[in-house]
Length: 302
Image (cartoon, rainbow, N blue to C red):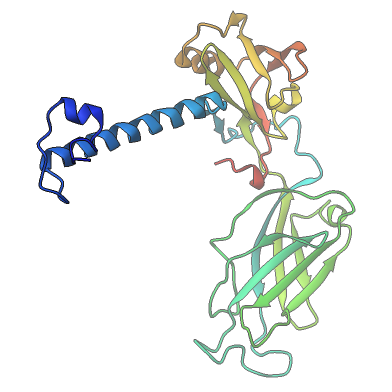
């Protein structure tokens, strides 16, 4: 069989020049490259169609309703729930020496590198960053926020030195009846047998003003995607997955993204009326307005 006979019919009919036996002509190389590129494009298109067929649609951005600090003299009604507290380590004082009289750190400095833990039901709720070479840490870079702690929870506070040679806590203290201790106080003052002292700021939950509602705008539809647990949206009965059918009596179908956001934000302060369809396909009205939002740190709200 000749080289021409071994070519695809298309190659023979367009008259590609042939190279000597065992070599491929430039024209044939170009034809092969074009053929492989066409096959690759076809595979990409097929893959894209397969993705669409499998239900992978567009990604819609999450819209948030505004949150703001309450103005001076504003009454937070309802007040924060008793099981949500604002917690942060305020400070600690560490003795000059370890319990057995040794220096704290033989590498990198003579002072400890302390960090603290707030443990609830044997789970680390708060772990501060390490603050190096100090006897009086304040952990300025720690995360401060609202935490939910159930009544009767087992609470323990620990203070550690980040030293692999000393794997014992500087201080560990059980806190009994946390809510009762905080009924007339805004901090926990803990003194340990080692001589260390820890102060934990523990106040009623800090709040902002807003709706606590997050939603997505689809083509001719809007859906609730997140509701903060302690917010007007939650108190109005809104839940993730609810479809917003109308806003202030106006159907969402046919609205632009800007119209939806404008209607929600413009009426938040005076009263926002929504008509929604829940996950159970039942429709109901939800009336809400800006009010106290006690967002938990875990809800990741700026």
